[in-house]
Image (tube, rainbow, N blue to C red; front, side, top):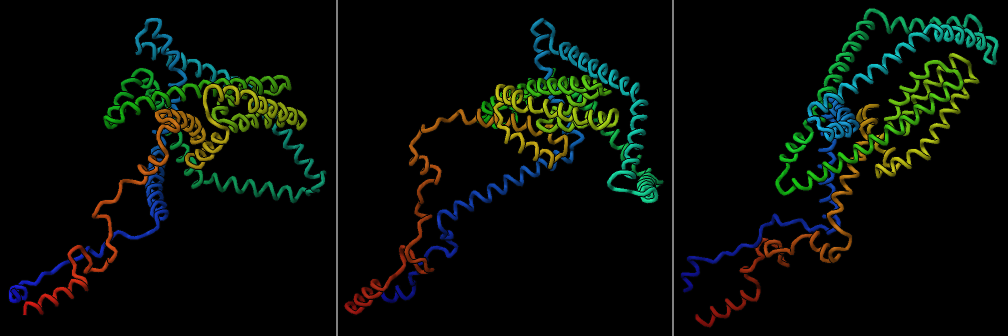
Length: 420
């Protein structure tokens, strides 16, 4: 037996040295959350970068969604009369394009008729500014003023020289090409969103996993309802801003009343700041045409309209149609400006409204207090450890269920003496 034991020794091994790191539970949890948040943030930044890279396509499609959300009730009204979806969409598109064309034509005629008078007012205003610089508190001499004018002229001539002109023409040509392409993308996208929106959405839902299709479909429909309500509220607020500022401009006899109203209406689609920026154009026109006192009155009128909008219309309409806090609106506008400029500010708020509606809808599937907190915590932490996860007290390479210890060595030595 001793010979057999010497010939075939029993060798036992312990667990691998590559065991799970022993760190505090809080640090392990923080690390798990951290790398997941990093991955999510990287994916979100990647999506935003792709949207900005393909802005020539993504921006017109986003504008098409807003137009489709505004025009879809008219299409549904025509369908209830008895028209099919295709002809209903065509009628709405033709009416919309015709209305915009007529409005732009009227504004262009008004600007063309008053451009000469406004140019004379600009020349007169520049002369008054020059006289004030010479006789006012600055006491600028004619030689200094001529030197400043020459510097401005040289800067303009340098930027519009041969190279600068070629660069400007190239940039203008590229911008015009993008505008034309974006116009046709908006046109066709709006038509197909109105005519085949249900089919397009059904195709997108089928891409999702089977288990998630029901909630994905419900979330998309909730987002569309929220987007439609947001566009309606924004149109009402924009109309109120445009009518209010047009009334002030008409009362003060400021030119280009209709053009100012159209500009304010379009600018009001950027909440909180768009109408104010557009109203500053009316202040400048009043300053150039009638002087500082009329401009000051125009400024007061713009502020009054904005106060009525911010404290009456916005809380009433946005609180009724869209559940979005003003702080969320400001944060969304800031993020949109950082990502895509003015276009990003235009799209960010309806995107935030739709996202808020989807989050509230998904949260409605669960109720507060529907399960015990201790059971929920155990479920979130994870299943209990198995034998493979448990570590022995002795983590040395020789530790293990069959590893010899000191007491076993003493018993083996005693038995060997008795047998001998």
